[in-house]
Image (cartoon, rainbow, N blue to C red):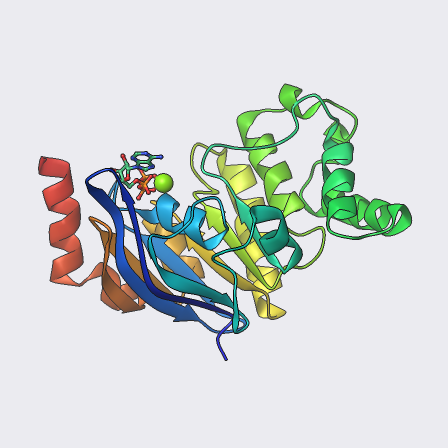
Length: 239
Ligand SMILES: Nc1ncnc2c1ncn2[C@@H]1O[C@H](COP(=O)(O)OP(=O)(O)OP(=O)(O)O)[C@@H](O)[C@H]1O
Ligand SMILES: [Mg+2]
């Protein structure tokens, strides 16, 4: 059984098919990349998978259980956690309280959440800002914090939407390092990124979307060298 299965998912906005009959599956322990030109439907796909949008057609299964009719909180509690392209943290809560609130929402006791938060603050180099309001952190630190929230309880799968965009290289390396270590321990990931060097380094397999459709899904280097993929990017830039 796959960790995540997306079966014939379609999502339209008015006349625009942002996601068009998309199907793929991710096995437990896989680290899969998702690439595609701007506007190709990557975020919309993540929104459907994580319950923020309802699909017009198709199904999403987490460990074999249909989740496309559940609310985002229920899907998170079932073990699918995500990070947003536009960072979402509680800006008026401290860094550590953001982590604690997430842990509590996911069923940890206060003591468990505090222990886990302490660990993550150290691993993500956020100890020095633990008591600052999240709104006072740099954009990169906010991304690191949102990233940390995804791992308060090790998820069945982590969906990350452009975690490295506009992030200082030091923080990017902290996040990439954390992903590498967790992946080696068996954590499953699905990562959207325009940063091809990072995708090549981290992901063994990559899915490429263009205009709502999956145009490639295979070993990362093969995807990046696929003429259809190259054409999609060049076509996108010229448009
Ligand atoms: N809520 C919405 N209402 C109307 N159109 C939308 C909505 N969300 C997305 N779209 C459109 O759907 C298409 C896919 O957008 P989406 O954000 O999923 O692309 P993306 O691949 O994540 O792009 P990027 O790489 O720029 O983040 C775009 O044409 C976008 O304008
Ligand atoms: Mg996007």
